[in-house]
Length: 402
Image (tube, rainbow, N blue to C red; front, top):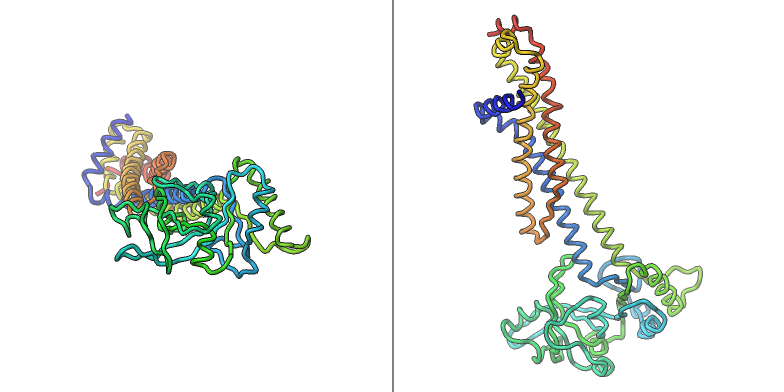
């Protein structure tokens, strides 16, 4: 019985193909929008989390100044000092490394090529803390860090932009008004969660940076890599206490620095992305309601057009339940066809967006299944009233219908 109703429904759909397509359009748009938004949102969340993980595992970021996350700013009085780093290294336990750093934009030159990039002054712990891998060369030696030697390590963007196919290790790179010897090449990381190119970087010893480029002794950031994730709160609390003592902050005074947990930042960004995706998905779901109303409307038209057919079926012995099933199945078939087309369209849109935005394609089978089931439910809910109306027609009145 049901299979016969499905065949009749498919025949009715193909008989009025254009009208059926226009009826499906609301369902298609709604399902496609929901699938696309959720898939793009999930991919964005994954990209943010992977980008923040690439900055370093189990990492704490200490910066002077207000409670903000972004490029470090501040004056000499507010910046960290070398003794702060020494105190942290002497008193903190359960850490893989502690790396002071400062950054500045500068033009680097090799031959006839020049490029503006970010220069970072730090020490060898920086590579451990930030999870940087050298694919060629070596990190800084202790003597190079102490003496402020003119050596540097470059990222993949610097290699491709300035050196092309030439091996950069062993070459002299001009940074500002001095030259440094390239001793290492970093493995590529790609874009960060904030849209910056992590591979566009030149890293040199902190003293070299301070003397030759910055002209001051500011330390704008202290990065701390914690060995175990469960120890992050304890290490964060201990680091804050040490820095308060070092910076002579009174018991009742507010901190003039911040120590941020990168996992908290990742969670905050991911939750924000999830909320935005949910809101956009809710707005897109309105199209499903519109599509359901369209199906009810076209089914009512169909009942009116086929009144004599319904009357004949009832007159020769068809039961009300059979007529009800026929029109209800037709409504469900319309909705499910719209759901299938919408799912395929949404996945195609999400795939194109993933390629264009350089984010992972994160299709969620649960969301796809839910969209399919929901489109079927729309067929049931909005198709029941027209089907019930058809089933309750008086056979005699139906046969008289012109």
